Length: 145
Image 1 (tube, helix red, strand yellow):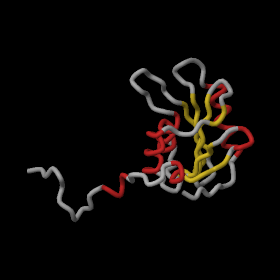
Image 2 (spheres, rainbow, N blue to C red):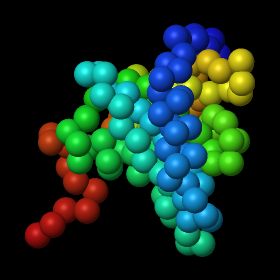
Image 3 (tube, one colour):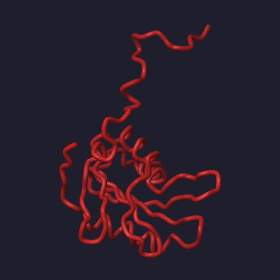
Image 4 (cartoon, rainbow, N blue to C red):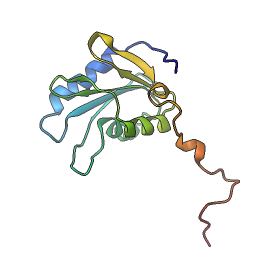
């Protein structure tokens, strides 16, 4: 696997860190995420912790971005509360992110070792959901009628 590193968007990291510091108070919200869309707009969100497995900050961010009309995300980062710093996306988030934004860049690493990599570098040889959907020309697996 060849990992190509991209410019680190420190403003994006700071935006996520600010949200983690000011909005993640208590056990229900422990992670913040920030993403920049292709127009330069920054979108932020926090996770919703729940014993049933509530959504991570990255997944909440996808909904928040869509609600704001930001459909083309360029870069994303997640930061933990209590000054834990940048936290890489979990496996579920990696799969969702690659399905929605296959060209997305993700900021990972710690301290002065932050780097920006492609989501495909974080999930090599991945299953791509869109690649396995039926075309309009193919028969449905569960025909109706």
